Length: 246
Image (cartoon, rainbow, N blue to C red; front, side):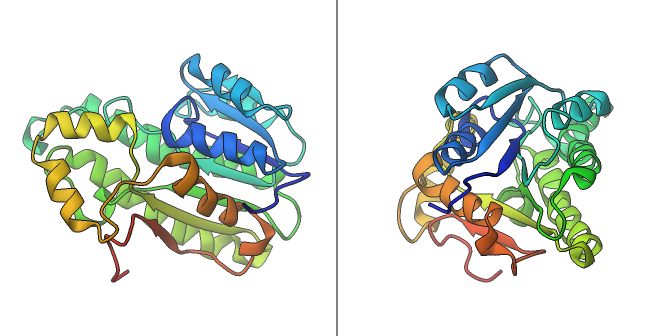
């Protein structure tokens, strides 16, 4: 894995799944990790990560929460915005979506990304900060079961591109990662749509879903490391070859 020794990395939505895997992997790579989550499971992630990892309860839709989490360190070398709405796995047709559902998705993914960027900028090291947003295949091809999830994940790609252009003169990189991994959320998606697992598997040339810790976290660590200093504004797709034309 990429060497993150001496770096401080903040991960949102790190209570479970891919966020937890990234936090644990970053700590194993030498980073001091600030684990943020809306629920208390973030404390377990910090314990699993070790290496001085600390948990901060944080609602990314609340600017004060985010500022308080970032205030745990004077310098934050890298940020991973992984938090998603609690409704991400709840099926909802577009015509049935309520304003509250729309706001929940948009606030966690998009407003949360803005809050993180705003809090991160004054704390990023001069000429070399890393900012990563976690998007999804749903942001590239849409989602028939949860269109709002596809909307906000697509929006995060636009956010990353715009921020990458704005921060480039400062030397900071901004990237997106689109993973396909065996997580609790994917298991729930399969339960919601019994045909999904078969359809997805047929579309993955490698024929299997990635492991969050072994397959998804290492590419994210690369984007957080100094080795990725010339990569910005891109979406790294980590999905066993499902998308090959980006």
